[in-house]
Length: 315
Image 1 (cartoon, rainbow, N blue to C red):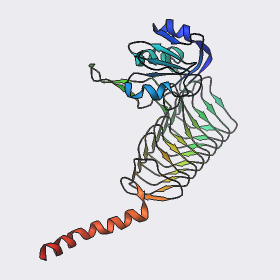
Image 2 (image 1 turned 120 degrees about the vertical axis):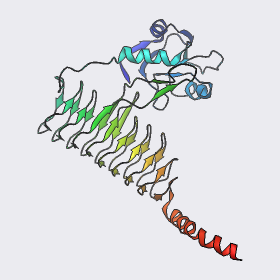
Image 3 (image 1 turned 90 degrees about the vertical axis):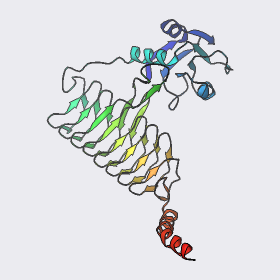
Image 4 (image 1 turned 30 degrees about the vertical axis):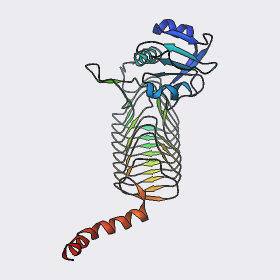
């Protein structure tokens, strides 16, 4: 999430009751989580396993619960006991939850020849381009950006909160929700099927690339980014932070694990599970998804096992 104006680390220190370690003259321009962090951002970390990743990332300022770390030159630490709570407080300050009192927000920016059918809900600060068709029952939540010539079929939800939780087993409620302050961007000529769900980014953008087509009942997790001309069949589930390169095809009921990359023009056949990054320009099958030609040969040998076992026992 980019801030409307730079904020000093001194103000942050006072607001969060945190101790400044390092450069106390810095300003931050955004708030982010580690998978989307950019130069100028503030990020938090509360587990030693991820200290080095956060400190050596592009982040300018890091909220942390340890002083026993080596700080790169020019960066700032904000030390406090609960970095997650401090981060959440900042997000809720700069991006507070707003109650909608109208079905179509009065600040909607909508282009020429675009149609909103009955029972569509549109939240605050939404932009819809030219020649779009939004079918009945669609929910478009706040800060969503939709390009030109986009079609969204009935009962789809765009911009729901990220499924992203901070887990600590030393408290009564183990799973505490991280507030979502990101957006959904749907680029020109994309089509979204019926009953799809596309989550907003935790702090960045979930993107459906130009010309991409989603079938019915597809779920796209937070901060996932589809490039141009992807084809996603029914009941595909894509976890958060996935990068799907241009021209990828995911056939029905494919499952995709979090924070991986699917290479350009890859094809994943129905019912497969993508659990690791896979290369482009290949066809994949199975769980875990592997080169389809190899996987098919494996299946042939698996079917032969009973006969081979019987022959071995007879011998």
